[in-house]
Image (cartoon, rainbow, N blue to C red):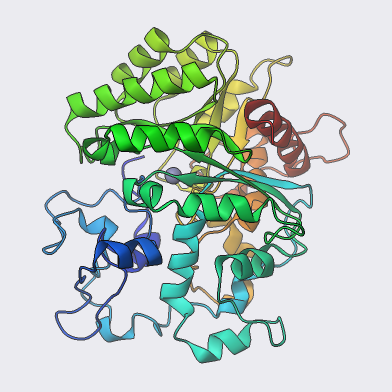
Length: 433
Ligand SMILES: [Zn+2]
């Protein structure tokens, strides 16, 4: 994927904060980020600065304060937007609309890759100051003040069975917020309600330059937590190249070796770095190791080589599969099931707060053209629906609504239900969740 449509670009870019930035100043010149002290930053846990952004912002657009790509901060990409109306802009639907209507499939949801702290922060940034919206939530007297509230309100009654939360920034990892979230799952009753909370932990390639012995020691400590189901996301990202390539490779090597030593499944981030990722995986990781290539958008040939080499490797599919600018992911899915006996070796994920599935808007006509400022786990069924249509319908570059009608009465038809069930089983094989 190299670009995404402009209608999504605005929504995405406006809600990102830059890496040091919990707060956003409105007003003129505006939306400049302000740096907070490290403890404050840790406490408020900024948006995931370090993982992939669906927007390929021009590299020249650098935040003047943080010196990071604009796609990770809140500078408005479109000057025609009224800066002072960030939180009240006409494109933001009421918070109640995030409590989704009936999905295209009611099979249990397992989101194998989400950034819950970042998602909650994104939600707060958009809605926390909007009293009307808080009251708008149809939870009668229940406000969303904590991440646990967020999960319980948004996922209540949505068949969210389990999530794999991802911790990939060195400040997050050192703050040990991951332990607080994971320990909450061990409470009786769990603060997460009926949802099973699991996590993976590792240093993202953007942050490879910040990897050190202290981080590695924490990864080993975290790996022993009963809710830790893998290491990552780790990998190579030559699209943004926020850490030097040789450093990214060295840090990936160290983390791969640690995961193999601890026999932990891998969550891999790879973007425009096919040769390096393939070489290091094949060199270091045993063939039968469990591997999740998260949010896959690279070439179908690359996917094929990895799938053939590693029998326990799965392709992660996010809402990005629904974007007309990304044909690769749908093509990979189609090739996976090209033969009658072949398996749909995918797991479903959101990578929230990023990448709202584009086809979800057909199900929420009440928001009338507005766009969700945040993605969350209950949106997974719409990705499954798109995957089913991509397998059975016309080329994936066409809108979902144009896909052929699936005969759901045919026992082996690729329906959203079947995609959900098979992906759920794959999540169990991969992470034991
Ligand atoms: Zn991620």
